[in-house]
Image (cartoon, rainbow, N blue to C red):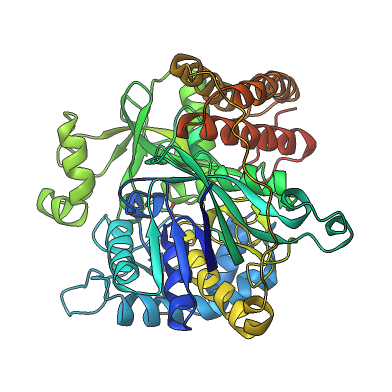
Length: 521
Ligand code: SIN
């Protein structure tokens, strides 16, 4: 087992991980940032389309805070919302516009173009056409790679967090505050496990929506950080609040492509397959109602009328040339699957999109475990409450990515003087070759269970069945994990099932329908 020592270990290279790495490096910390993929750009941030909240013409932090709390069904944490709405727009300017030079779209007078999205009371979102995430991630990762204080280790799959309580032979550790000292990571290239020892560790592993059959998320978004955190003893909250994006284009089997809410913000309207509008029946804001309301309404229309999908019509409301320049990514992708959005409506369905809950953190990204922080989607700052307002997740990444490092730098001596104790050697218990058919089938079972029983429409019976099925599956997979040689697929399956069970249990325990958690019984 190789032991890699660093000041700061960041697990995950999306927007929050990059911001934290750059901030830490600028204070002279030695940073190791690990990612699962060969290409560090491949993360959910890269595929985000809509944009990031900035500030509208007649806007204020208070107006933004009101919209966030209303969209979150009044279950958001006001101090976190207040802080983010005050600090966020300043950081957009400082980090994204002035430092990373993200090429945000401008209007004809050269000002930043402001777009609207559902449940925003004003147009306040800046964007780069419809590939904002790609532009942000590319700009930030370029700075990360150029920075000599940051090492980017690719193809490393986190297995578990290292804690003094679980991974040393120190019998006294259980009497102290739980302390994180890094993580075990599986190196896909060497097929070996390495121990990363760090004075501070940041979980920036993203979300878990890929544990659902239909999702807008990338392959790797299976909940690594939630499962590792839970095994290490972190507090997790609001796990039942899984946001379903109303408009995904389902183009092949279960594959989905996000159709940005910005399209409805620019005038597109939801219709039934026979061309009738229906959203006003559900909310006075029609197609621009809060995301949870729209997703449930589509689900209901599809279920009751046996529609395979509903339609999103932009062609009737925007000129063809404008569609192509405002939504080039969506236009090209739909065209590649035989839908010309300049003349045809897009068939859309809801799909799992975002985890509003996660590892409980304070206003500085601190968890209940010493030396462990969580930022981005894996964390629960309380900002999103029971349902997230569009284009606030990127803002949250920026604010907490910055704040976690401010907290570490404020206590720099405390962090840097720490010398992680000797850890137990990793023992390779698995000897049997992994059977990929079993791993894929177990992952499929998980995705069906989550979609059908822990989805948009939850009942006591469905949740009970989900917990029974997943408990059984988890036991099988834990056994399988012990006697099988390690692989990315196996590690991810273990994380995914653990996370799925956490979501199902939270949904079971919360009998009250709120935001995106809807229970019929
Ligand atoms: C979208 O473009 O609709 C997604 C943006 C978000 O989830 O905030």
